[in-house]
Image 1 (cartoon, rainbow, N blue to C red):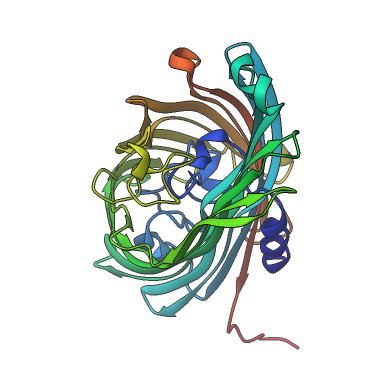
Image 2: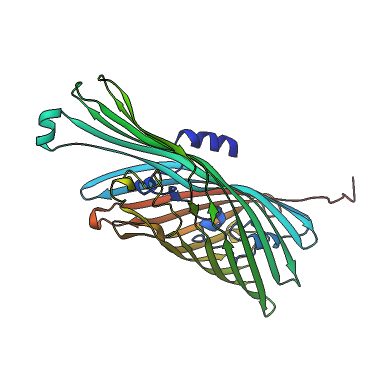
Length: 425
């Protein structure tokens, strides 16, 4: 299923937003459908019922001999507004595919794949200056971009003294992004131009996590969590080109191909605090911070949008990004045998985040609220998670674009017990 979605995503948009023209695209929302239904929290979350990919230390929160898997999808719906102009988009992509299993006693491992960023945009306009089109005829300018970066990861964790859990994770980023720009003349005596960038990227990184759980009485506990993800030096190739096109003689105006150079994905720090009461209520707060200002993504041709730094600088500047997230979970009675709705896990959350770039010196902020639930299926901890995310990004001030979005997510939580001998045939 994952291979099919990745293949389909290569031909369509994994995400669609004008802001993805810059840098490595639009950074994906963190975690699985389980995390998304609670505003994206998970740094301090320890649950033996669900996989939590946001902190590698959480993989040890499990029943012994349990095999767990998670597969999530999401559908993104956006309405854009810039001045008096409006448009809309609908896209579909995977959120994660993860499997997890115990290693030895208090240690466990998980492997999986998640999107890191998505590029998807398309726009166009006509030149209207009468002093220009009076001599050349109509001129049309169009631009489009597509592609995604994914992260494959393998994480392992171990718990000491039943309270302190440590985890480490290896991450490998990979993907391809294409950005194309066209200038077309209706007068056949003029040549148009076709230019763009083909970006193929690989980047290894590591992530480390810690969680400490302190009991508060017999039923409640308080867990502190922290993560650190290293910066990822970009490897691969960035190809930039510009050709003249039309009935007049065509020519190669510009061509350059080479490694990304001193460009990297930023490191990230995160902390979280989670309060849990029995198997009934949970509340968590997370804070993350990532500094992109010296990563080089705003200076490398191909990553600066449709403006080349060689022509006087770009309106795109890398910045410091932060996020604040809060999430809640409530289960009336997991053991109820009469009323199914009492066994459902109900969740809600909220978040505020600042993007990793400035446009004309203006920050791009987003905020939203989330709702969701996990519906138990069959036995053990199997279930189907459904969620919704309502939010807004950007502003209509300073000629910027405001996005109003309404997203759906669905996740399949799979659980089974391995290596148990049947006592009766």
